Length: 441
Image (cartoon, rainbow, N blue to C red; front, side, top):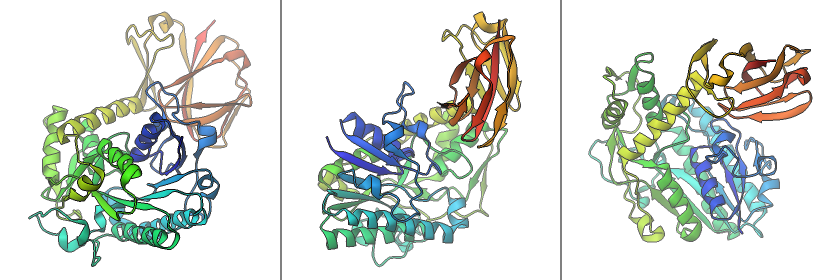
């Protein structure tokens, strides 16, 4: 059994990679500061964590030098996915911050790996197509990018520069220590699970707008003519697994399709999937980033035996359905007390949320007790309801809290049954949005 550390392992790519590694019988450790990732992404379809979170998940900030060393000392391989990245709005409005933080994150991880050169068998560094020269991405007449065109360097964004510096330091690591390395340069990755909020990248942002429309306007940054080589997360994970097997010592390798898809084409596909009649507004006052790019993935094909397999339409439909399911959970919490969903007879407003009681056996005696939001450190004390037989805490987000000094953890949409007569205090050890329901005696 091999041991792996995946930095950024609670994000979209990382969580899928962790699940794949575990499925194939490996022991996996994860470092993630949860800036965009979530521990719930590391759960399987039954809601159980795929790794023991208490011992194998570390909420570390990799900006702190040396913080990862206690984990790196335990593993054979490091897959370094962690970085600061978001949608084009965030990237271009926070360039200095993003550049500086990514430089520190990459250098701290690589320096720590260097200290264990006698035990580490390999480092996978994840780069980006944004590091390719602007001069090869500023025309709509797309010629697929080749690895040998990376230098002379001229990335358009601070993000591209920061990732290129980490890539260079990875090369130095291999040259000076002999630790095998492989750099995979990803094009625009999409899929689930993913961030679809205000910092999200183009596809999840467009999907969110389509689902919310007309409540949220369907505004698109730029003309829509700009294009990218979109690659599904399943294809990326396949590439990572192949790189761990046979990517060592081959320098940097692109993962991405040879086809450039315009944002306008993505918009049209998302609107079609939604089934809605949507008025699309292209805001040409907003930045577009690079004009267009695609990948010549012949190196990945020849060395790794890799090529993309997930069709864009199928991938978009999958991501649309996933985001839609999460938006429903965010806005409507459906609770089945006994697990037998008979109907949805009642809906109770809780702030901007709705909680549905779905079991008719509970309909007559379920009473809303309280709802609200707690910030880490808040305490509810002397909370006694002798007229109630039991409480159900239905959680709207992943949280950690204690009741009567006993620790609990909940993921979105789950509920926790607490005997009411023993419920005297609740201490929020993380931010908690909650609803209490009681069942009368």
